[in-house]
Length: 75
Image (cartoon, rainbow, N blue to C red; front, top):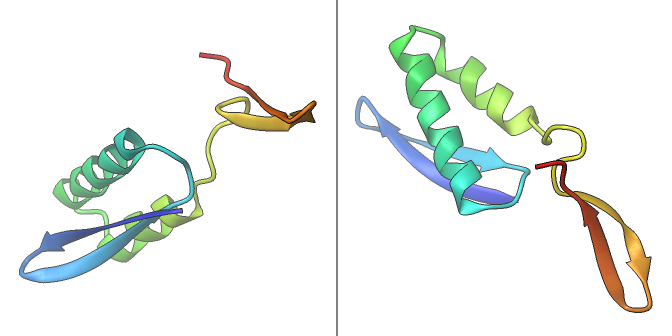
């Protein structure tokens, strides 16, 4: 789980992301800002980001064999 903060109108808000990678966290911050620009309530965009658990087959853990962890990544 990754956490960042974003400041909007002098208020600090937490962004919690359940997918790996700093790039995904930066994308989440950009998505929240885009939602704010589109006048989507902040609590709705933050809730949507927090509930996002990735797309299917995107860095999906498949198991371990002989001490090696295997992941499926369609990209």
